[in-house]
Image (cartoon, rainbow over all chains, first blue to last red):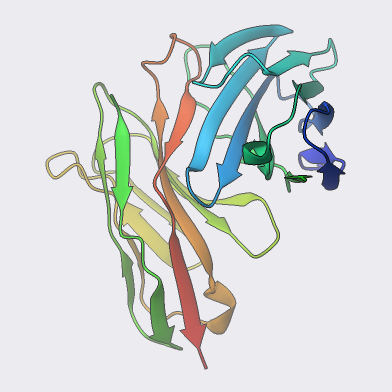
Length: 115
Length: 116
């Protein structure tokens, strides 16, 4: 079974631009979560989507948004990029079985550099 | 709120040495606990997990036991290899967050370097 895939793997943008990152979950997984990884702050939760609805949101400004499609694929968008948005953005998927705590499986990440 | 604290390292060991990476947590309720590993330039890979007290997770020679009395989930391996060089993250599932599957709360990560 294919793992979580993320595209693109690398991105370079300039301040003020916007960017869209894509994530395809493992087949059959219905929950997709996004995390930001930086050297200073470590791994921080951005948001989680399930059945095209945002279920959870971390403590990030409104410039960070996402969505999920009917096939469970997800995108995240960052508008008005700032230098501090440079990070590795990781997507994780899980089964989201009822009443359970599922393991999250991560993709390889998208490395975003903001100049 | 819930949190994870792990030794930050870096940890440098010789091949075949014994490894311990300490991890303690603060949580209400009964979270699941995880160890993830990140190799250079890659995403996170699940190493092992435990879902309730006294559970032992194990994989590839690594082990960790969910200790509720000491709120710990220390990672151990009896004999490390050069190929184990990576960053290791301890994490818990924050089930208090909005009643959903919960997001993962990570420790800062511990960089392990194993020398031949």
